[in-house]
Structure formats: C-alpha cells, structure tokens
Image (cartoon, rainbow, N blue to C red; front, side):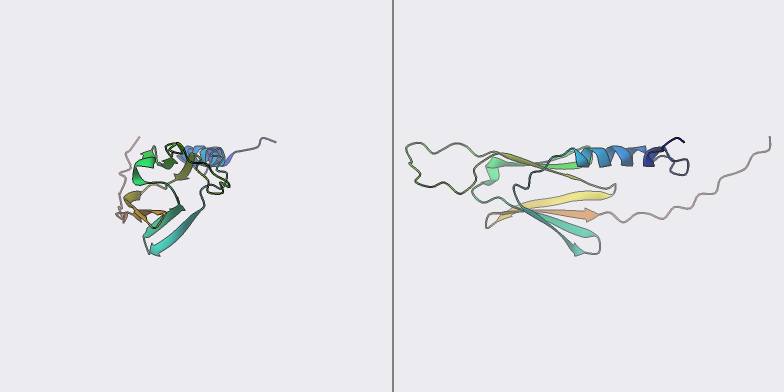
Length: 137
C-alpha cells in the first residue's frame, strides 16, 4: 500500500504548496523568544504583538519573504563601561517567522511600550463563476 502525502492526494489538485508551507512552518524552530500574541481584531483583520523590551525601531526589521512574515531583532552591544551585577533582561538576537495564507496582507507595524504590533488584513475575495465550454471531439 502506497502512503500518500496530503499534497499528492488525487482530490487535492494544486495544493502541493500547502505541504511545502507546513514543512517550512515546522522547520522555523522558534524557541519561544520573544513571546508573542496573535489576536483577531475584526472579521478579516489580525494583529501579531511581540514583546520586544529593550529593542528600538532601528534594532528591528519586518520583511515579507514568499508569503512568510519574518521579524528579526538585533540589539547593538552598547554595554561599554557598564558593570552588571545581575543581567536578567535578554539582549539576544531573534528571528520569528509566520506563514501567511494567500489573500492576507501586511498592514502597518508600530512600537508601543516595548511591544511591536503588526497588523494583518484579509483581502475580500471576488466570487468568480466561470462557465467552461465543452467542445465536440
């Protein structure tokens, strides 16, 4: 008996990309830093919020790479002459990735009180009915 992957099932024509997206999501290897929330703000809009205390806007980058939203953070090492008796605030670089569905677009990104907010919205799909003409053989 042959095992079929979801992308190769005979009734799932054209869904090969879905299998690649699932594999890419599984390999992202997010370790839990920084913590984040995903909330639905209305019927067709969402907000991703990352806790990025200690990072400034210039330390962060938000990019969209092939339907994958990638947020990267890298702080400058400005400890200089400072001597820490205890350092409990994480100052490490990070990368968080989120795979976006077709039709989901990135709106704006904003920093507020150590939180990075990224707004997403789902475009309203057009209902298209197409009649296919049947030719005689």
